[in-house]
Length: 196
View (spheres, rainbow, N blue to C red):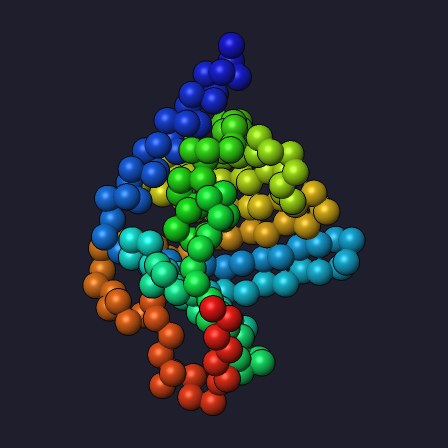
């Protein structure tokens, strides 16, 4: 009985978070990303910026930039000085910057966790129903007062984990649509590889 109530509380908070994000015309966030894989002795940290406008997004990090206008996907590989262009066709259950707020709706069981939860941050474990996924859990930290995501941890079956921490979140600020399309002038010496 307690677990079912916890699940209902988790679903309620996730619904409030989803409704909150859907109300925003645009979103930007500075974030940190950590990849840990103890078996391979990997502990990499990066910072980045994310911009979202509807189904469009732009993700800028040190080594790459990923942007889509909702129909075309550009992946800028900064070290290789290469841009890969493809049709944007994410799988229905693919984890993308625009799907993270709704991914709980299908294919996951949410569980509110007492451990790690505080008055200002609730921890929700999303456990995939499909056990063939490469991850066994996605741990979300949500500010219940603001209904905003503050952290997401993807826990993989190989022992690795990817942690995203949102550092600075802003909503409803003007973002030009050109931000979500590759601009050759920004990367003049890069080779463009069209994979469509």
